[in-house]
Amino acid sequence: MADINGNTKGIKKTVLEDLEKLYELQVPTTQIATVELIEKLRTLTKICGREIVVYINRRGVIIDVAVGDASTAILSKIDSRRSVQRLSGVRCLHTHPSSKSDLSELDISSLKRLRLDCMVAISLEATNYLSIAFIGEVTADNDYEVVSYNGVDLEDFCELNFSQLMERIDKTLSFNAVAGYAVEKNHEVAILVGLENSRPDKIWKVQDSLAELKQLADTAGAKVVDSLWQKRERPDSAYYVGKGKLQEIQQICQQKNADMVIFDDELSPAQQRNIEMFLGLKIVDRTALILDIFAQRARTHEGKLQVALAQMQYNLPRIMGQGLVLSRLGGGIGTRGPGETKLETDRRYIRNRIHDIKKELEQVKKVRQLHRKQREDTGIRQVSLVGYTNAGKSTLLNSLTATDSQVYVANKLFATLDPTTRSLQLENQQEVLLTDTVGFIQKLPHQLVAAFRATLEEVLWADLLVHVVDVSHPLYKEQIASVNAVLEEIGVTDKKSIIVYNKIDLITDTGVLQELVKQENTLLISAKAAAGFVELKQLIANNLNMLFKKVSLLVPYTETAIVSKIHDLAEVLSIEYLEQGVALTVSIAEEKLPQVRNYLVQT
Image (cartoon, rainbow, N blue to C red; front, side):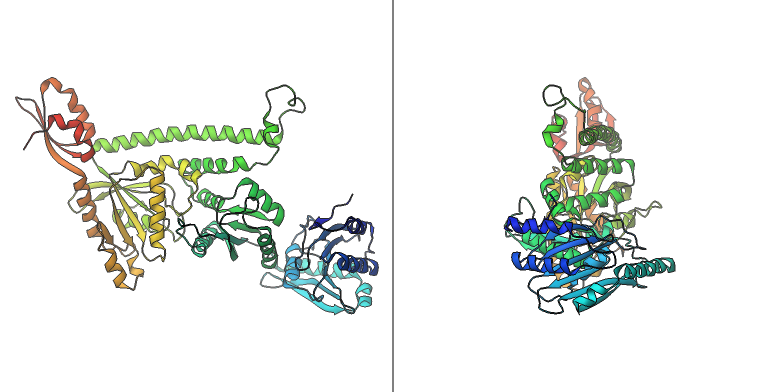
């Protein structure tokens, strides 16, 4: 039995049988369509009240029949081979149940996107109920020129020599390709989709979140042509947005010639599969988009391993198949036969690869811990820069340290991923190690937080955090909240920190800046203009001095083994061997003071 695609629900069985009989009709190669086919389409449209679409190849064979409704065209995916020099070899005829035959913007965009031989619209009007459009040539600005005619007479339509017309168009397109014109995209065209709800814990407005999603898409290399959202309390379990909204998205994708749809939240595997089947386009969620950017930005071996781990953990549950049926490989009933399937082989490979990457990252973690221990042994304090992505952390690191080896800086999200440590001399001549960490973002994927845990532990071991904020961003307060949420997720809750409001050179309202500096441990700077650096170094020094206490210790000779432990716990400023024991002057963190309290010299 032939397939009838689209919305067939509620259509009588006899009508479906008549639709199936359309596949039996043959159209002469010299005609676009026969009078018999056109009249059958009009009759069936009157009966079911829905749009009917047929696709015909150049041999005159009907290869697809689909049903829509009174306002929506269901334009099936064309699998014919296409190139910029040739059309698809398939033409589309569809009915307009409740409107004139004039071709819509959706019809024209579908003609160009699918490179159809022609697009024909058939209305239920009494006369001149046909319209036709076809691609004329490629224009100099890399687009297709469309030639269309509305209200075409039926006799003229059937007498048009279709095979000669297609031969002429193919030659024109081939000539344009030789001349240097070709409709080739150097980027993917994307539509953004989000949800708006009224949850009390929701910080970001849907418009702001979609604006940031557009920045992410731009960074990944996509061209965003439209964005839309739906207001609902919770995502639809099957389609994220309702089916009605998906139909609207489908039309916009055809009108805008979109290649992909990007959703502002992480989709479940079932949601992603259902939406892909409905739209017939590539579906990407926010998590996959961020992972793609990280994959582009990773430079070091460690960074590439972390991104690979996050991507595999994300993709593993999205590999389609028969679920547990394919996993029963232990023998017995239901397990005998051809052996392991390709799907299960892929799953097993990914699981094994995840295991191997985790082992490699454990080795990286050990090396990082060794380096951290060596830094601690030197007694040099560690300061970490944290903040939202594109807040200016790398620019600040470069400007403060002024070394020959500069960290990559760009006005893009996640321009740098790999942590970089530089030596910084403060105003009191104290030397500290300043580390630039990966930027944060709202809805940061959990896979990335887990994969980058070894990197993010630099923040855990820092003596002081410098939270860099892009004060010129209209949502800088929301960005601060997002950074604090990620810090809490990785276990940083009571770490001493200062807030540095960056990019003050972009602020014209000085009243806003004056209000900000009233807060404790805050500072206004411009990393690009190197403004406020003296004050920043002094503020870092003051906060570090508050974290450590200078004390005198006296260790009896009977307990000299504790001296080596004191070297590990604190910075030894001086040591002297007296008659009573070993006298030490140390600078020690407040939280470590109880471990040496028995040896404190009361002053």
